[in-house]
Length: 207
Image 1: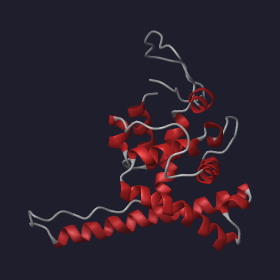
Image 2: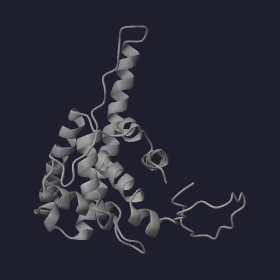
Image 3: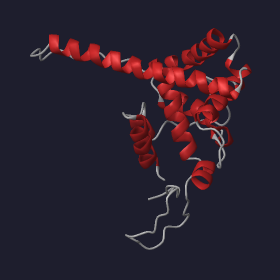
């Protein structure tokens, strides 16, 4: 699966444009090896656990097996604008604070079931956040209807939307995700317009 296709599928799952997609497609600036300058090893471990809660191990390896935490660190550093980098980094702290408030423990110390419960609640929160922001933006645009000089203000992104998007993008473009979760064909064969399908078959990793 190429980068453009992966971003398109993530956008379909998330129901909107992928944050930083224009940079992902055009190519991010060169990266250095190792953990991103914005993140330390604890951040990467935290993001791996958050990603593994979103995409846990089932019949296929989960997101942590693809090291999505490292992927997120590099992509946020190299493909996000400074304002979104700030939101993402602060979001890690907010996620930990939400865990302490709900379970009286840090995210890394709660059980997998508690992590799932927490992220479901935060996911609902981010969806409601965007719903309210779009309503405000529409009302503001209506007030300025006919004003050629008016430009609607950008809606600040929500940190959990970024985490979800990067988890999906990192996993399904990884070797683990492409070969273990999707059906993978290393070398495309002839065109077959009528492939047999059995209920429950995995999607293909490439088109």
